Amino acid sequence: MRTPRLGLLLAALAVTVTACSGATKPAGPGGDFAVTPLSPPAKGPLPSFTWSLYAEPYTLDYAQAFDYPPNTVLANVCEQLLRVTPDLRIEPGLAVKWENPDPLVWVYTLRPGVTFHDGTVMTADDVVASLKRQMDPATGSPWGSAFKNVKAVEKTGPLQVTLRLTRPDVLLNELMAASPGTIESAAFLARAGKDYGVPGGKVNCTGPYALDQWRQGESITLKKHPGYWDRKLTPKTDTVRFTFTEDSAARTNAFLTGTADGGYMVPSASLAQLRASGKGTVHFGPNTAAANLAVLNFQGTLGDLKVRKALSLALDRENIVKAAAGGVGAPAKAPAARGAWALRPERTEGYYKELPEPVRDVAAAKALVEEAGATGKPVTLVTSSLAPEISVVANAVQAAGREIGLDVRLKAVAPEAYSSIFVDPNARKGLDLVITNGYDNTPDPLEFYQYLRTGDFGNYGNWSDPEYDAAFDRAVAAADPGPRSDLTSELQRIAVRELPIIPVYEAPYSVFLGNRITGAPTGIAQLYYPWAATIGSAH
Image 1 (tube, rainbow, N blue to C red):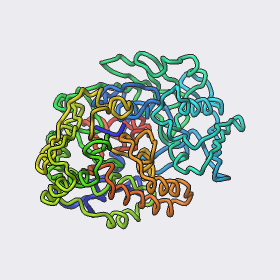
Image 2 (image 1 turned 180 degrees about the vertical axis):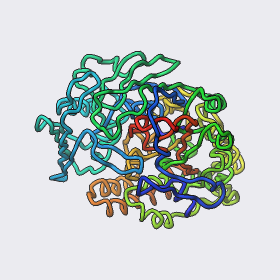
Image 3 (image 1 turned 45 degrees about the horizontal axis):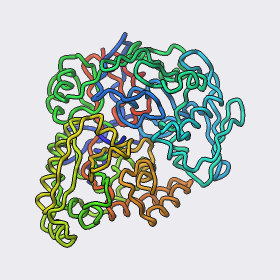
């Protein structure tokens, strides 16, 4: 799910850091913070800590994990063939090596001696079963489209798996560092069947922590896996307990009282309070996400490009940043954040200079609405209590729309219904716009822009543009990161021109660490990197 994906300021807000040490200090409004991929290292072990999630995971099935809460838990339990590091690089994971001997072939050499949580040893059979399950339509995985160019997944040795493609696809390999590349025990999958990953059930992966207990509506507990293969990430804490608090004020209070030792995605309205509390530290990390408005219905009012441009022109992004991001952010120029460009970060500034500034011009916006004959026409924007930022942005969009003659109507839905919009096409019926947090799981911005390709699972509004699709096909076939980055910038220009997604703002990732703990990675890489393993005592 993609929800709650200027100048030196933005470079810092959505920074791509090239080393694990050091921090970037932003300038300008709200610039009294640094962006760094790691918090100070732990000084010792802990028996346990409690971690706050803004919502309960709807699943712990790796093939269905498409949102922050499930991925935040699973990052410590299940692992992928490749690994995304806190500084947004890809390194070996359960595969020690990967090769592309032919544009249509990817070969993965597996790490020997890796054990699942039940003590059985990982083999090529487990990898084949895990990947094929993602591809099986019966699974209904939101990641299924990542395998759209795969014609075969084959065991080619006891510790070797080969993927054969119908067309070149570099992005497929990079996504082996995210949910698509997750490996589970084949025998366990067969035994669990439809009960796999559900509340009260189990999973059997290879990560530094094993799932101990899921008490639906209350908590999820993980316990240290004594047989974990990566000694560099041997857990410093024996037990991790996750709690679920949807109300942002209650979640902030949990941080202040010590009921929760920490949590990612700190409520923006509480940033100043938490930073001044003396009860812990708010850290800001690299982020690949930007807050956007995704068009869900191109048959309605927003099907006219003039109307989409008008709504974009009418947005008061500066005030949205103040209200929705606690002033820690900046207006977005493109659907993909600058931090999503870790592929070739040195080229990012040049790409963004090519794009128009996100200026506010109400008069021009109103004129476009009139030209389109859309004055008084309805636009339904879905909102939810899932995160306070959603309501803030929704109200701002409604005000902007009405100012230029659009009848923007807000439809409030429960948090679980809001989440369904991103995985269930039926949940989008009657809706024109949704507020999303569009992010990359990998360091390649092409991953974000694949979601606008015709037919992709993440193309929520079924937008289709032949020029865009042709440009994407050229980019995904480019093995060299340099040319691929340039080709992806072409996709970005088309997206900004056609506005199937209206960019709103960017902000850094955030994490609160109470005074008793430290060691957590601070950025969005925590969705796949085993972040809990590095947390320990601050004293």
